[in-house]
Image (cartoon, rainbow, N blue to C red; front, side, top):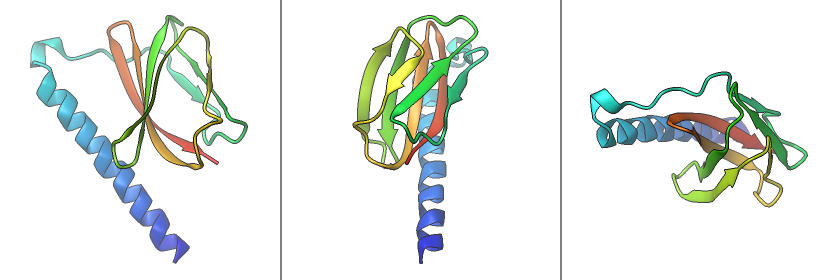
Amino acid sequence: MAKNYFYIILLLVFLFSMSVTAQETKQQPRSQETAKIEGLSLYPNPVSNGKVYISTKNDLDKEIIIFDVLGKKILQTMLSSRELNVSNLPSGVYIIKINENEATATRKLIIR
């Protein structure tokens, strides 16, 4: 039974990531596609201590948006350091979108 839930959650994460990618593609003309964030590191993942660290090559200010697996925006903040406090989020699977300057990245985030 738990194995089935795992596969359902995995499928939802995959479908959500495909949906986000499709929406981003529709919103931006081909000539203005966003660049990928160079040297992006997101750790630890899964998060168990309530803090996740986000570093990049340039380490500029970042806009952080966290979605649940259904696509609902859970958290939106600006991050000027490397440390993001996620201790107020319940355990689960999330999608984290990171915007730095003109570059964007989306990753899966697991909180235990």
